[in-house]
Every structure is written in structure tokens, then in C-alpha cells.
Length: 127
Image (cartoon, rainbow, N blue to C red; front, side):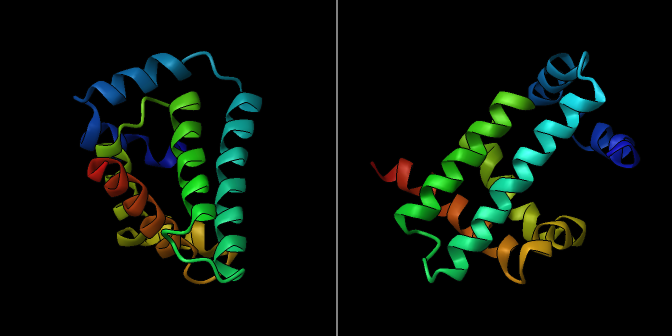
């Protein structure tokens, strides 16, 4: 993660979310980071299992996982609004680094997670 700090600061350094992230994580130990990151990757592994079980991205199971991911990000990193979450979902497929990392659980996991995020957030705006 250290290798991406400059890129993150350049892209989002002026945002409230970046400032919140900096404040929230400033006292994280290596173990805290490892736990938070492992929790997020476990959710991506669950997305892969959900996809492999034949669920659609807008299925109830996939929506539960998307909501769990958003809550995890909010709890451990910064407030993950729907707007931010949709952007993350897009980045999971557009940025090959993210896609490769998420697809370690199976080809298409990043695309499935992105579609589930999109469906969750769009479903909220339609209500």
C-alpha cells in the first residue's frame, strides 16, 4: 500500500474522504492494517463464491455483500458514500491493479463486485 501513497494523495488529497482516512488511520498499527485489509479481501472472496454459486450481481446475496463491503470501508477507512462507492466499483474494473488483485479469487470477481455495487446504489436511489 505504501507504494501507492503518492498517487492517492495526488488524486484525492484535497477531499474530505482523504482527510478522514488520514485522521482515522493515523494510529493504525501493522496488525490493524492487516486486519482491515484482510477483512476487505475476505469480502471479495465471498463475492467470488456468490458469483460461482450462480447468483446475479443484483441478487439478494450479492447486495448483502456489497452493503457489507461499503460498511467495512466506512468502519476502517473513511465514510464510503454511495457516490464514492460507485466510483470504487468502477475503479475495481478500470484499473488493472485493482482488477488483478480482486480477480485472484476468480476471473470476473471484480466485474461482479462492481456490478453488485452499482445495483445496490442504484436501488437506493430508486426507492
